[in-house]
Image 1 (cartoon, rainbow, N blue to C red):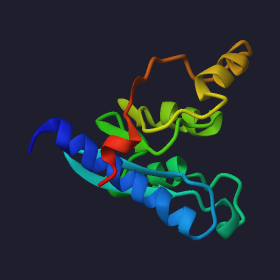
Image 2 (spheres, one colour; image 1 turned 90 degrees about the horizontal axis):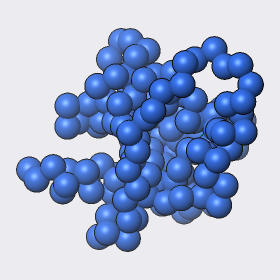
Image 3 (cartoon, rainbow, N blue to C red; image 1 turned 120 degrees about the vertical axis):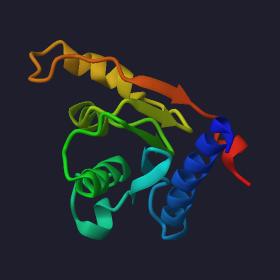
Image 4 (cartoon, helix red, strand yellow; image 1 turned 90 degrees about the vertical axis):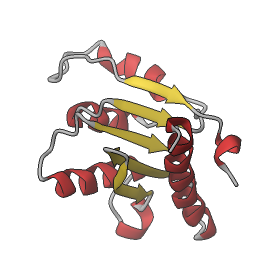
Amino acid sequence: MDDSLQHEDFMRRALALAQENVNDGAPPYGAVVVHNGEIIGEGRNMVHEKKDPSAHAEILAIRQAAQHLGQHRLETCTIYASCEPCPMCLNAIRWARLKKFTAAHRLMMPAAQAQKKVMHRPHPVPYRNISCKKMDALSCIT
């Protein structure tokens, strides 16, 4: 399979999870974690449903992927999400050491901008660059 088509398939799944949320009256957030061309974790925003402020799509997908691999480091994985991550999710991506992040949509307050505001304080995790890619959500919708 063409690598770019595979990327679109993964993003389509993240967007489908986001659409499920919209259908249920929730925010449009969905994410998948991919390892060796296979989805090993997926999530959609379940903050209200689980009554858990950390139940963001990216966090749930990372948790599922870590359990699947039996380790907390996901250095060989890529995460695809319907939107750019909030600061909490961005830090989870950093802690899990995901090699790449791909977002379909940029929020009004980008996580990177919010992250700059947080980075001036001492932080227990050394700053690492995460390879990011923005995809056009419309190109992934069938």
